[in-house]
Image (cartoon, rainbow, N blue to C red; front, side, top):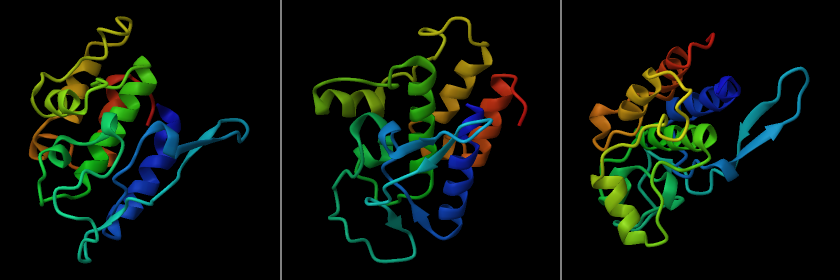
Amino acid sequence: PVVFGPVVSTLERAHSLGIVHRDLKPANLFVVDSRPTPTIRVLDFGFAKFTRMRSFTVAGTVAGSPSFVAPEMWMGSTQLDHRLDVYSLAAVVFRVLTRHPPFHSQDLLQLCQLATQAPRPGLRSFRPELPPEIDDWAQLALAIDPQERFQSVRALYSALLRALKLPG
């Protein structure tokens, strides 16, 4: 999780410029083998939303990778902002820590229902050795309502480090 620092910094900068990535997923994060510590770079801003510009995406279109898409995208909300990336980054972290996405189904309708209605999953059901605070983190990080979610990638990341008792 500490290696996610550069991802957080990149997303913070993008968000400050009114850019929402909208397709954060493991395949769009590139590990650079830099010594002594590897780092991660964000790739593929192809689905990016420029919040200060008129949308080019047709209303009702779900952009992104299904297992990492925020609930408000599935629900067709027109009030999309940087909290899409907060959710997606949380889903990526969940996947990294457990080897499973928060929700999974081969059926897109069922995946949509899980993401928008199901109880938020805990990481400890996959990794019981993780501290109990990690499940509290997941509840906030993956909240259905973006108002109840962490409000920035930095807040998400700082809380993650605290939950895992890692230096930040």
